[in-house]
Image 1 (cartoon, rainbow, N blue to C red):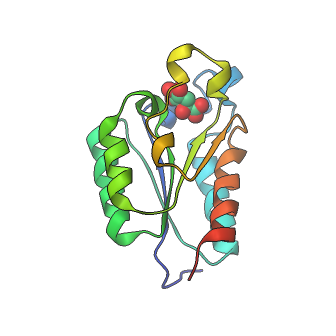
Image 2: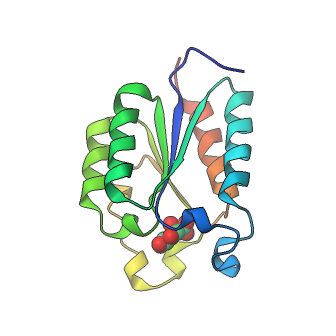
Length: 149
Ligand code: DQA
């Protein structure tokens, strides 16, 4: 089902293209393609389209956030390692002025100290960490409950 609504942008940072093979004991066995399928199904059930992207490059993610600013209804983002040091992604999210849900597959707070800092959380309305791939679906369910229009 397609709609006239602006899509929900679901953005993924570096190395998340390796989900399923990268440290499955930490990140699970679900692939990014599986996550995309689940997220699209969840959103479609509520009448929303999804723009789903992954990039290993900070500037490409900034470009996508800027695109969402004018074309999107909300942003779900797992910035991966950029979470912990990207002021550029922080600033792009600030400029977007959209609802933002930050997702991490792992519970970053139970891991190395450098993962306890998030520049993205300063711009996030909701933070989900440790629910695995299902965290993305939780993010969409939250948006379905809160988005207007
Ligand atoms: C991650 C956590 C980050 O610390 C890490 O750099 C990632 C994935 C997660 O989803 O748990 O690449 O964002």
